[in-house]
Amino acid sequence: MPLNIIIADDEYFIRQRIIKIIPREELAIHFIGEAENGIEVLELLNQHPIDLILLDIKMPRMNGIEVAESVYRNYPSTKIILLSGYNDFEYARSAMRFGVMDYLLKPVDASTLTAVLKDTKEKIELLKKQQKQIQKYYHFEKCTFLSNVLNGCQSIEQLTARYPEVSAYDYTLYLGAFIYEENEDFISELAAKIRSHGLDCEYFKELDYAYTIQFFLHKKEERQQLKEVLENDMPKCSSYTFLALGDCIPLKESWLPDYKKNLYALNHRYFNPESKLILTEELTWENRSADLSKVRQTILYYLNSKDPKGLEAYIKDLFQPLEETHDVKYLYLIVTEFFTTYHIHYGGQVEFSHNPAESASQIIDEEYRLSQVKSTILAYGRLCMTESETIPSDLSLSKKIIAYIDKHYSDPELTVTRLANLFQLNPSYMGSVFKKVNNESLLQYITMIRMEASKRLLESNQYKISDIAELVGYTDAFYYSKRFKKMFGYSPKDHLHRKK
Image 1: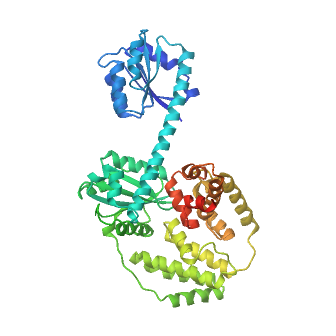
Image 2: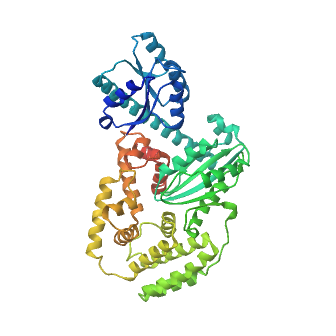
Image 3: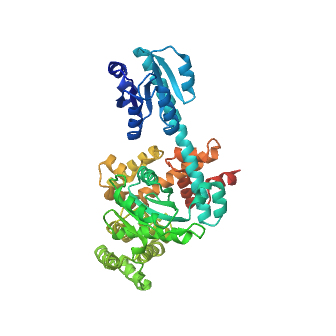
């Protein structure tokens, strides 16, 4: 990764010489700017993320030692190499208290500077990696604790004892986020952006494309501030984004009802085809009733008649009221009824990887377009109607996709869109072909391969759970543990105990 540096020296020609002798491409160095005094150094630090400062000791307005102390206290991730024309080791000794990484005498030659920069870059990258691991562990630990409080396994008092900063807040609220495709960088950037506005939060990954961000507020009025940040100061995201902002909950009351309400609200994305932020109190919660026996009877009529056009028209008629009423429960009800019919009456002909409710849930969780849900239901219906062999070209494509996934499942950036780009296909078409051949979606297959691989790694007793999560393509150990438990019925830690 590139190293962002600034050069600080009160002499222009010395700065230019240093810039000239540094092998920027070889060391992947990005010059952010120059400074001729200590005040300018601090101004650059305030405007840009800086990894390293080449800092002269003797400068006007603020000398190098004063700058080093300010950097140490206010920008701890920024490191310093001191430059001086004076062979004064007392300067170097005093600077070491402020995390200065090296000390060079001017005029420094190119080979010495290159060697020191290379060594310093390696140390900075190692520190960044260690810091990232610490942050991941803290994130995993806090998410686990918040989840335990949410589910009643631990109390608010235990939470505030472990995280005293939480006791300063009176309210909490949830923000649901659906980002298509998976984009954890966007969520972490969003959380950082919100924190920069003085609001505390933590995020959880719920599904492959869905997240929950939990906020802690001093007063209810801060919800309006949060809404304005989400409307006006969001990080850029090229994917479809749907956000559902919940209500304020007194910190000491149960969080579970509002948490469930917020997750449920995310399904309203199907009625908002453009990226949008909605407030949960603005949603329609209408529940329609349906004569399920009649629905099943009609589905069977078209399946037994081998009439795909009739089935397609019936699906269109069933979904028409959804676009008018925005009834999420009715959506689940109808999709589940289709898969219940498929399972019961065609389970011997078509192999399903999940029970009806799970199949419906998987399809709804993975998409944000009603048209795609209808296409998937119809594709399974066509599969039930025919006993014809799979087209050889579809089988060949499926084998190539599986071979690629089996080899690259550990890549955290492995997504349906990336696969589609690799095979130069439309994502929806590629997904439908894969599903037709394998009776499961690409996301389901990727998850299954990762989970089976993680089982083998767990059984080797060589890795921590957080390390295993990374080895099988998950950047979030908390989410990995949730997916593992959902698939197998027990946690990764429980799996180790079962094997022992």
